[in-house]
Image (cartoon, rainbow, N blue to C red):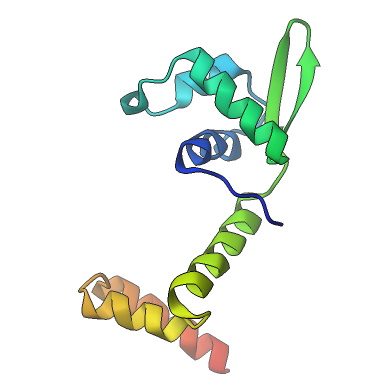
Length: 123
């Protein structure tokens, strides 16, 4: 999957991923963070862009469209995570973890989760 989604488009996708059913543009506009201050027209622009990229699908329901994700969130996160690690850390995870540790970005809970994951991977 090589769909690139901007931060603004990602806000729309997060609403769709969180929904358990297809949504109208108005439904999405109501659920977008109020800090964005987006109009319905802005939301419709984002939906058009995402549809053109193949990130979402839509179907007609009378005079309105119902939108739903065409890609799974976990698949998108996986692709973007690999792209990020490749771009900034040469595809290696250990420099990323080291960078986070050096910047005090890892709390005790994070460290415990990483240790548990490594233990599980070793067994």
